[in-house]
Length: 269
Image 1 (cartoon, rainbow, N blue to C red):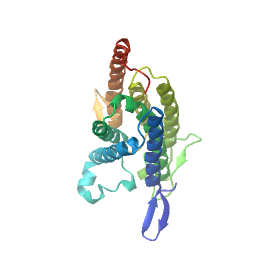
Image 2 (cartoon, rainbow, N blue to C red):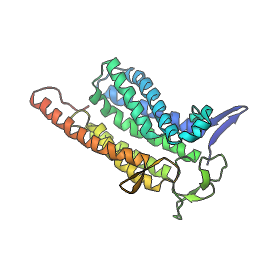
Image 3 (tube, rainbow, N blue to C red):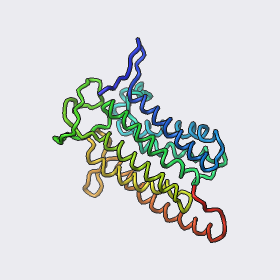
Image 4 (cartoon, rainbow, N blue to C red):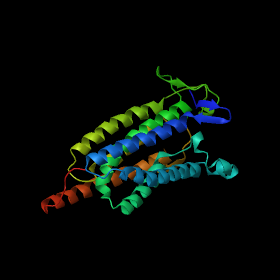
């Protein structure tokens, strides 16, 4: 594909970095639009985004480095080189969540209400970022003979031993599914019965989506053996995220009903 979008003298514009940036901007603009539509104060989201982006980048890179620890112990100067790829979404989700909690406290936001605006923006921005993975050849799929298989031939692509081999275009699968998830979350948000419904639904649906998508991935992502079954690190995390999201959905739903019974504000976020 096109791992390098543009080269001007010593300056190289990496396609992955461009789409990564577009994903952040797209998510921020959508969240800001939903927040203002919800009656939120203009300018709040860009301030919150700083906390979230810093936390997400640190978390995403830290988990990736941890999964390839031997390599990065031998090549420590490559640890900050995120423009070459190497970010794990779940690590970013954890780090970004910590940043969001801190920002919500600093800005005095209703955290669960705000997350209903975050959920669709998160899915949207993630989807755009997956296009960057596709152009860079990262996050690639397993070999396949399906008619829509893609073959990465650029030696700069991040496809490892699968260079020149037809593989599943899992990045495109993920992009399409995340766009569908964005629409579903916007629909849930518009009809929300309690604060936190959209983010809890996101956790359930994305966790299931990611668990199944991992079966088609061909890149090394770290593996664990549980009860004789080999699962990727992301699958193990999905097995934790989905039950937690279900529990959050139930608890927040009951809390919303209690607030409604007490005559408190339980309007949709």
